[in-house]
Length: 83
Image 1 (cartoon, one colour):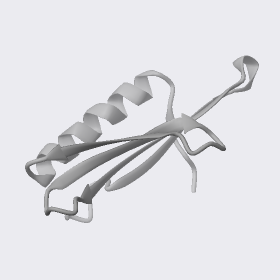
Image 2: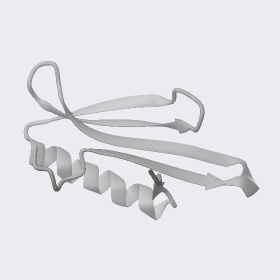
Image 3: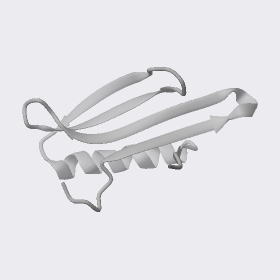
């Protein structure tokens, strides 16, 4: 996988006024059978959360899906977690 592409991204949305503390993780990983998977994990910060795996035919398709989900989450107020 090229080094200039995002392969693992952690987003957070924290709004203490409404008791909201959520996370969203996007990662592109190889599957057990050699396909490329976009793995999405989400939930309340401090919990295990939920996980969804989307299989893609190639890396570029998975990266397009990752970028689409990133834009969706940014529109809803999620920001990348500072390191």
